[in-house]
Length: 188
Length: 188
DNA sequence: ACCTGAACACCGTTCAAGT
DNA sequence: ACCTGAACACCGTTCAAGT
Image 1 (cartoon, protein in one colour):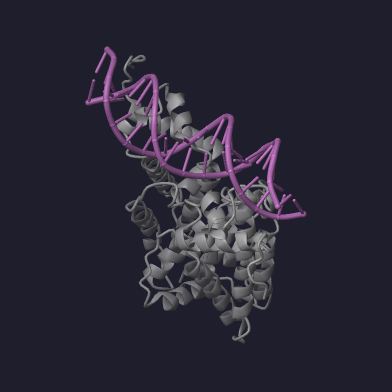
Image 2 (cartoon, helix red, strand yellow):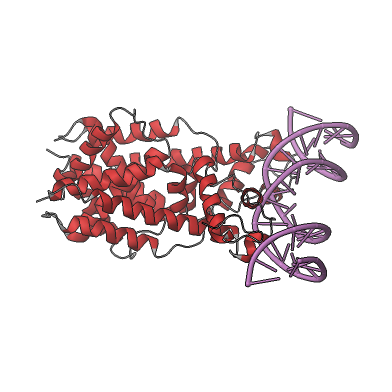
């Protein structure tokens, strides 16, 4: 709506957007305040009016990611009806988010690159808790919740880290089998 | 055996040891070649005679970590007899290593801090494969292998990242329940 | 062959000064 | 209130020069 105000109308938001774009393209490690500032057309000192440090800025970007991860998991619940499918769908959404935004995902869970995001962990847990609550459980609720998060997060992390090699063709099929394995167990 | 040779007898090994010590104490992020060199009593340029970059040095430290993680998993197999227990023990060893060396664990799987360690992923997989092979499976072998790695890695990562809060008292008990849940499934 | 000293380009952060 | 310009301390890396 507003054109380009001379003394930068909404620098705070623009800093977050620019940082996110660079993170998604190149990862959070080579990132530089100078590049972010240049991308916004301001001096290197300008970001310090809005964020106390580079880590604080990255922390806000990570928070944005947690919001979207939660939304993706929530959105996956709208289509399926059976409780078993819903857990698998939630896992697919979780891993799918990590695959679609590998650098952002790594930033979110890196803990040293960004500032504390203490509310994000519990919030993610709460989202998964809703999904698990619908299932008829053979183990304590807390155990089911933690294992569900762990298997989704493990598959996502190993994939993003290049440790598990998926060929793109069979990846979702395979992923569903792996998530289903948690429901029924792997032992005969 | 050898005292302190004047023109540094084994700087390469000393650089790795010093780096590892700093990583374990403070994490891999604030680390600086200047500090490593100073810790070894050499100039900042000296490490470049032995490593092509800071990342290459960190890559060697990560490789050391992968060796120890593999050894810890292997060692966990010597005490238990039943195949089911062996999988749980392997998972406990995996998570135990991550808990004991959180910063090293993060470096190993961070991919941006260190140079490629392409052999490490497959090697870790191979170690777990031996453990899974002994079990009577209800799912394809590959599925069992991947889910086992994923749940161990997920529990380890979330724990190291401060996402799952364990009180130290019940952590191993809880961990065993969670790993057992993968064997038998969480659905009723 | 291995290491030092000095240099280069660069980075995060601060702060007086401008508008 | 928000931003600039210049400065500070620091970092990874290179390279001629020393032993």
